[in-house]
Amino acid sequence: MKKELAIILESLEGFDSPDINLEQYVTPPSLAAEVVVNAKLMDDLSIVVDLGCGTGILAIASSLLGARAIGFDIDIKALKIARKNAKKVEAEVEFVVSRIEDISLKKKVTVIMNPPFGIQKKYADRAFLRKAMEISNVIYTMHSAGTERYISDVCRDKKFEITHLWRYSIPLRRSYKFHEKDFKYIPVEVFRLRKKD
Image 1 (cartoon, one colour):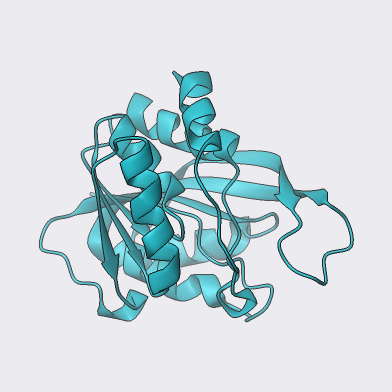
Image 2 (cartoon, rainbow, N blue to C red):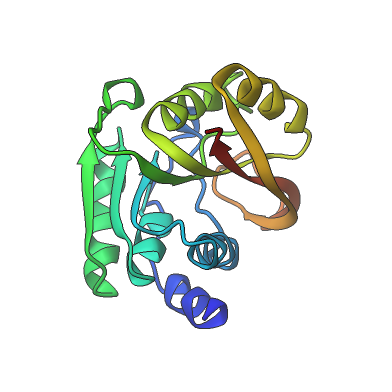
């Protein structure tokens, strides 16, 4: 299941002209497949929301594995590519233009997201994490390595717990002019968070 999904996700388009201020990077297809398959195995793929969905890879992967998927992003150009990507692989995803702060949902959902790491704008991931905890009971979230203590602190404040932590080294492809190499490997942490009863 994971390998087949990763192959499909490889065919999706990335950003035309990524915006460094939004820290737009494409989630590697193999990582997207791994995270979404883990969510499926844990029975977390009912209604999935991707906050800051970019070109749609996580929302599309969730849809392909049976979820009702919704992707939110502030960038209209990215969402055009996301819609095109979903159509290409026959995934049913609702894409919505919205600031993170403005998202409001009536039902509790699972959030699967790869928020900005906060390299360009310090703490950029915090608004995403706060919103995810507001609208969901279960969260899969990707962060640069070394954030476990911060995530633990937020969980304690918001009555969530870390149930799983996976560590990966992922290839980051050259996306911006200041990148010196075609790609480099960066360490990331993927957390599964669950609201306490």
